[in-house]
Length: 106
Image (cartoon, rainbow, N blue to C red):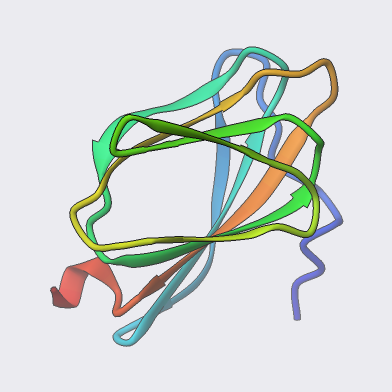
């Protein structure tokens, strides 16, 4: 059992991350961003859902369109959509990345 609210993987020198589930049909990662940190632009390599656990200023950029996310928001991201995520606020941001299927099986 893992409690995703314990030992959140914040890093001072860049985004923090940890893998929580790694199965053929599911990959779940936890990402932690301090203010100003970001997940670089990339294309979604599976069907993705972002579940924001903590924070009020997660800017999610999907195919060039900015969306403001906050704790409790679930944001779907279609396969191959260009995306990036940035903490644009003053508090920490922590979210789950849920990928189905696991990108290794795409």
